[in-house]
Image (tube, rainbow, N blue to C red; front, side, top):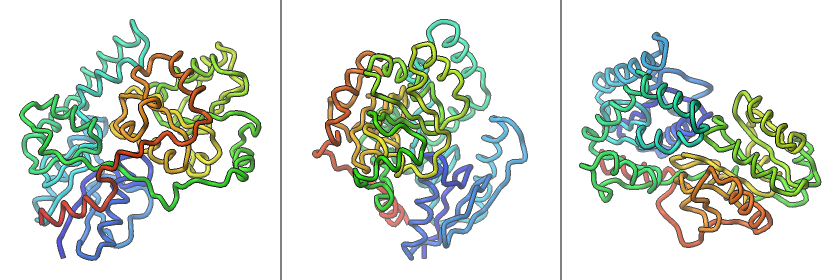
Length: 367
């Protein structure tokens, strides 16, 4: 029985990295040949069956304090427990395997800054990032991981290539790529006859072409650009936005463009499979995503999907469904109009390693 530890600040089912960590812990525990521990600062909800949770707490405030505390506390646990294999899923300084799930911070900044309006808003955002001690610490830890970790694993070719660009001493061939895979038992196509009932359940219009999008950071996900695109589409096209907080800025934009009555902000949605089945097309007009789970989930539910070249999971989409510039609302509107009734936009010639099984194999090989 190999003693394996996963290390991530939050043990939770909510959030991309957190959901992955929760699922990986449960999968490894169910394999039968691993004794699994999860080192975290905070736990939200139940741990997977058979997983031992080691909580190190979060006694210091602020981004810098929380990041530094967890990095040091997780390292202390790692040294004390002497696990056979440790897997870093966040800002940890030493591990046997580090999963690169977000990409290099500097290149994330370069992509995502375009989500903010040119001029003062963009300048202020750029300054605040560079003056943030917490973000600078995260960059330092990234460099330590790149230099000290025996095995780096990327969750998309997009992230792998950005990582090699940021750290030229690394070689792309030495970084395996394992894509995320949705829970195909939950995310699967529904019956077209159920669509009207699902829309009524979510308070959405029944007789329309319904665009879906999802995310917590509306700017980063390009929701403002999507609303501008909506204004160029027929009045029969509506938009529903899942997730996020503070929709007032986006609602004001929709109001100014005369499409306020065609936009719904749903807040946190726990039953995303049902929401996907209620839609006609899923659009993730993101300025940066390492490997957006929402794109893979929507594809698994049978929806046509449109995303951008700034998203790692766009590798699964046909070329016509991948937009080169997330700031181009006119081209986005054209793409939606062309694909809303096209059926699934997934490639059939792309079958890379996906899911949790390849991670178990890597751990076995290291152990």
